[in-house]
Length: 107
Image 1: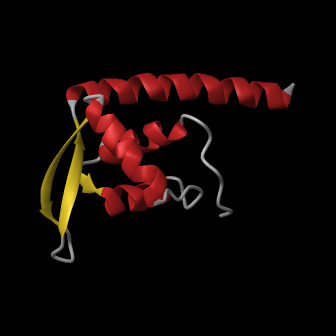
Image 2: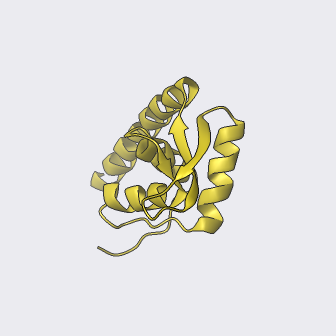
């Protein structure tokens, strides 16, 4: 599938969705986003890590250090209760937007 640039505001939604399936380290979040979007979106470290830190500061994520699959020290992120609520809010918002755009394209 052709790679697509992330639309403004979609990165948070994709990170929250990726982490809704369980804790992941940064590379794991990036891989999960690629997986759940069928390869349409790839998030590089320059976008991913600032977003993870911002979302942690907002209280949507918590983190702890652990070991990755290749025995390297990695920070693992997981959703908090406020993060789950934010995922729900953002999912509703993007559902409305996508329905509106689909309607406009059919007009």
